[in-house]
Image: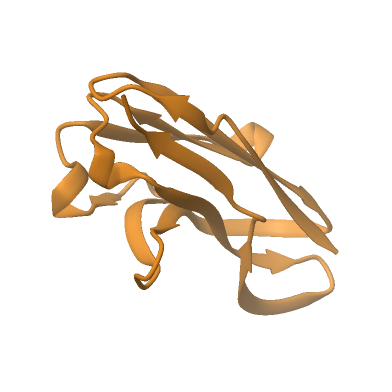
Length: 121
């Protein structure tokens, strides 16, 4: 019914940059919020950044000033620009979308398959 397709992960040196993209497709009526979470080995999944349909943005304290989330509502796509990457940013990054389908008014969370980001020299 809904697919979230992520791209842009990879290996980068400390201080480098990456840009993640996530496109939502399917029988979507509306998207309330889109965001990025990450999960490092042995740790719980944590919020990185989220942007609502109204443009309100929230960042994890650990990425403020380094990461920027943006959204193209016409394309149902969310981006995460990551600058000044640190080894502790290494994780699998997951896209999330809270949305309503054409077939039901219920707000439901959908997840992408995840993309690996590795920061290492």
